[in-house]
Image: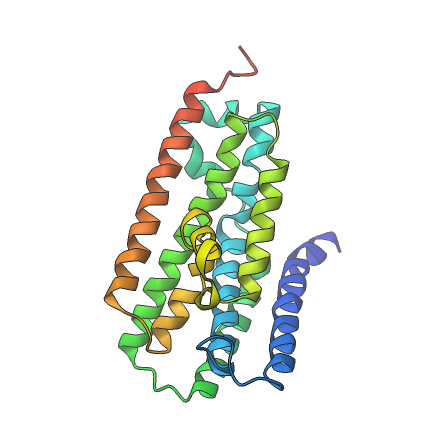
Length: 244
C-alpha cells in the first residue's frame, strides 16, 4: 500500500500542478491574445517543456541531490567519501524515482497540443534540436540544485536559500522568460537562470531561436558547471568528518 502511494504520489502532485497551469493560461487567453510576443500555443509548449524538464529531474536525480544537505550536516557523507566512486555521482543518482515517469508522457502530450495550436510543422531535425535544448536545461537545473546544496559546506543553514530557489522556480514556471526586463532579466537569466529553462527550448521549437541564443545557453551551462565543480571540491576540502 505504501509503495503504491509512493509511486503514484509524485505523478499525481506534479501532474495536477501542470494541469492547473494549463487551466490558468486557458483563462488568461480567453481575455488576451498574447503574453509578450507569445500566443496560446507557445505558452502551452512552454508549460510542456517545464513539465518535461521537471519530470526528468524528478525521475533521475532530484531525490538524491535533495538529500545532500542533510548528509553533510549529520555526517552520512563520510560513507560516500570512502568509496572509490565519485561522492557527488553516487549521491546524485542513488535514488532514481520511477514514480514520475508517467509525467514524462503527460509532458509529451502537452507539447503535442502546443505544437498543434501553433500550427507548426516539426521535422526530425527540429525534434533533435529541441531534445538538445531540453538536455542542456536538465543539466543546468542539476547544476543549480547541486550549487545551492553545496553551500551547506560553508553555511550553518541554507533554509532561506532553498526558499529562494523554490520561489524562483515557481515564478519562472508561471512567467515565460521572454517578458522579463531589466533587473528581472539579470536575476532570472544570469544569477538564477531558471528563466531560460523552458523559454529557450520553446523559442527554438517555435522558430524564434537564434545563434546568439545557442551561444548564451551553452555558455550558461558551462559556467554553472564550473561553479558547481569548484564549490563541491572546495566544500569537500573544508569538510570535517564526523568520525574524526
